[in-house]
Image (cartoon, rainbow, N blue to C red; front, side, top):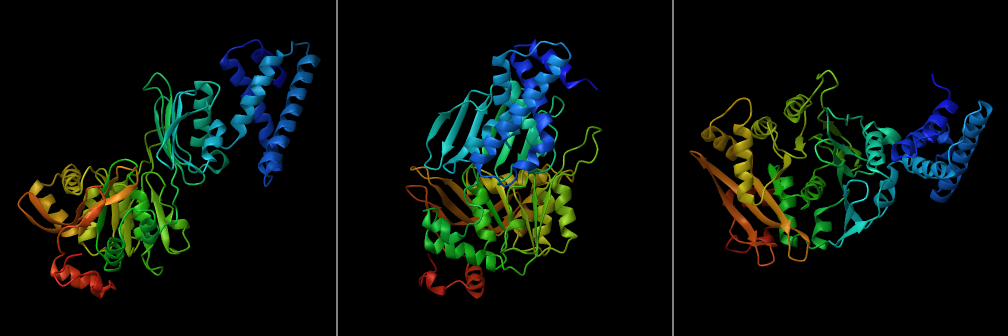
Length: 443
């Protein structure tokens, strides 16, 4: 193994960003065994103590260099490497300050210095660089991918596996890409509402009180629901809110590509198992996709199966599960309207290895899904429920639905048509106040 002084001297002669990063890595590795000393310290004390430890490490490396007759690194290089080492030793590097800001919901980095954030009020602004160089940004993301500092499961992120999707400590979701663009890029989504109820969403203007009562009754009556919408419209948040209405005694199995729902950590759901898809290892083995996880979940005696995002071959086993007794299941899907969600489900099911015909997928979809709930953005930027469809039946290649709530002038859902009498009766039997319906059966 190379002597630390030799590494330091070699690095000292390289005044490039790469040389600075190499020295920062050496300092980081020297401090790793002592990081436990910082556990539990307040933020200011943590930073001060870390700075002192780094100064000691720098002095030790310098003493080794002098002892062996080698030149010391230049002072500017040492100062820059120390600052970089601090960022590398922080759980998420230079991203940590942005992650600690409760007003930030999304972080986008197109390279280390082109950084943008979106805030809770919907505004978007440029933020300071999150790393001194693209190389440092890649290093930070790799450390997160390796599960450093409790950042979750280890995942590869390299030239052979250039995309990365993982959950950060605190529940934020990171997606990063390298090697396929001129600069590394990342997107981080932070969920503000990890424990949320339908009443909370009413208070935020996402839906009306009658609509919230309808959705609560849909859950209580064990109807299968697919939540649809575009990117960042609040699908996961609504799924959490609806899941909050599931009785605590029920056994829930959640299936996700990347952990995001967090229901297994919710005290309201003491009997919940969270499953996550797994990518292949370096030898190309060990992959487990969501379709396989749905099949496994059915062997775990679930009362309900929840799929965080259905977007591929897992749709077919999910529809089979919904139509074979696992009523009350929930899933989300990307779609621009509640009507398109039906088409997406059928298309994904038809693309599964079983290669069902559209007639078969239409029949399966109509027999499995009871309601489609669609979310959108209101003109003021508020995430709102814009449409609710009751699925009726299939005829040939078509699935017929009844849009009981349709988008109003501001895209918020307004009453549009009555439920089927049998459906309304089932929801009332499940606890919905019949006063929600007027004498015509409309909302």
